[in-house]
Length: 433
Image (cartoon, rainbow, N blue to C red):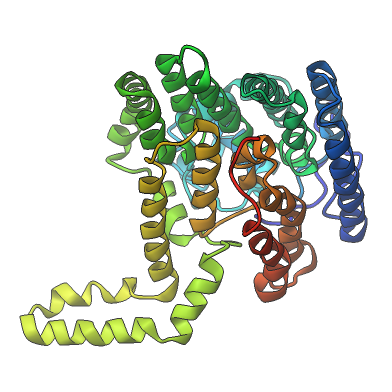
């Protein structure tokens, strides 16, 4: 997530303000936006109509749509991937720096980071990128498409709230959230596509009668936009039955099997992301440092020496040494905790509250948590008025300070983000009332 220079005019797109250029103004603006948001959401929750919610949500996204994507450069990769796919190349095998893609390079390629890593985005996301590549000004086209999808997600959330006998205004906590509007309309993150599909899946699960095949298709769409919903498939299957699983698994396999066959397994970009990426992980950041202070890697390496002596297989155990370091050990431990969250989600619970609880657990276990990752939890936090996660949405923009000001994330920025969250977490609950 590198800082970019001011993005030039893209056709009709005029950058009205570069959020990365003046951090002081940016954070004053965000502070005022969140103060207004919390004030309005609390007072209008029971007094606003569905139409008004969607009209204001649309206006907020239109206002932020011209922002240049200078806080995050992900959308540049989206444009590149779309260009690669429409040119007939495989973005899962060829990184942007591949010689085969030289003819596609331009000024966008020069600004794009991580050019050595193939794409990590699933097939449905690639389809959206490809559609945008055929439209005039692909960068703004992607943002417009994502805003449209996000507004559908807002509409689905309104319907879900009403179906649960909640005020339609509960959806305001997501639809008007400044972090959501900035990350979707301003920075253009594809998470909006997966979130909308996930809300649709839960909506079908709570419909009367339930619609497991439609829910399965929606869940598959969410996973094919970004892989996050895969962890919820066991829980949703427990809640809806085998027809859901057949639909979801069948669609996911049909879309991803060609990718796996063409690449000989898991896409290398995804492996690189899982092993190497780390930023602002709520449990990961302090955990790996604790393992380092306790000299756990040194203790494990000493045990490897013992095993070498006992077994005589020196070459076998020598292969383990490069993997014994605190960051990877922390990821392994958090992977076990994530498995615990998935197993706990199989207990009988409401699809909406269970989704919030599980997806929140996924983010807590993640080694990487950029501000826009919270979009996966915020629809459920909106329905439940979950204080901790809603407050976190206002604090997560602090995670941009390291790139804007050059300040280290840990410990003070990290504490500013996560200390209030964990304090509020004790008094917050995933319940619909």
